[in-house]
Image (tube, rainbow, N blue to C red; front, side):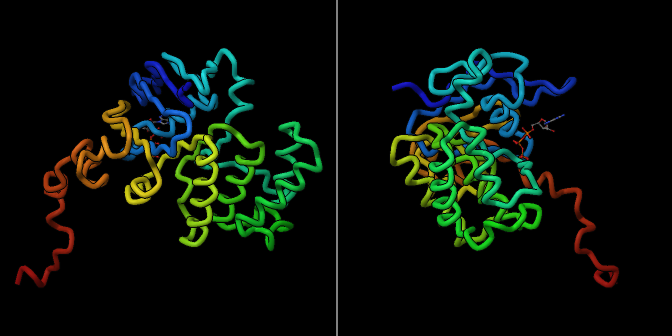
Amino acid sequence: MTDAVRTHGLVKRYGSQVAVAGVDLVVPAGSFAGLVGPNGAGKTTTLSMITALLRPDGGHAEVDGFHVWRDPVAVKARIGVLPEGLRLFERLSGRELLLYNGMLRGIPKADVEQRAGELLDVMDLTGAADKLVVDYSTGMRKKIGLAAALLHNPSVLFLDEPFEGVDPVSANTLTEVLRRFTASGSTVIFSSHVMDLVERLCDWVSVMSAGHIVAQGPLAEVRGGRSLNQAFLDLVGGTPHDREAGLSWLGARPEDAR
Ligand SMILES: Nc1ncnc2c1ncn2[C@@H]1O[C@H](COP(=O)(O)OP(=O)(O)OP(=O)(O)O)[C@@H](O)[C@H]1O
């Protein structure tokens, strides 16, 4: 089976800084895959290059076997993206946003209306469907963004921190929607800092650190008998005691010296 995503030596530099330093990311089709790594590891930059939002300085990426930069139309037709810092059309209502997205994707109007209604319902946004997006909360924005990314039934869905700002009930709903999506053979790739969540949801994990993939494979293999959190700390963790050494003043009170 073709991998849903495969990158070969992906590189991105910002001036003298190398944000992504030759990444070979692999995600088998049908996976619920997690991309984890410390702040600044290069996760967003990598996902941006795979989803054709950012041109790499080296290497290339394939989605469903299509070359991202040689065949961007085929790739964009197959992917759904919930990027970090998602920009939405603020002056549309949630429903209008979905209808507009569906029409841009060339989906017949009746189908878009039906899908939009169902997605709004599943995301518990029916009551806010006619409210302007500018008035949505952080979690509601994530949910409408995810609905927009799912509307054209992509085969690979990329989500950058999809659960950030989402309440536990809504997170549960999102999880169920995404589980159903992967059960039908589609692929989800999401970045997250929440190891418990990744451990609970994912069957495939890629760990990034300082622009490199430091571990990648089935969840059980990456965990290696430890919790994913411990595996993560072993792979990328520093020495917290060294870092805290300069904070002797923190919490100290003048009266303590007396
Ligand atoms: N537009 C930019 N200009 C300059 N440097 C950038 C730019 N975008 C990202 N970087 C740098 O590239 C590195 C990787 O950033 P990236 O956002 O990909 O990391 P990340 O793993 O997604 O981090 P986080 O978990 O904090 O979101 C960081 O050091 C960041 O400062």
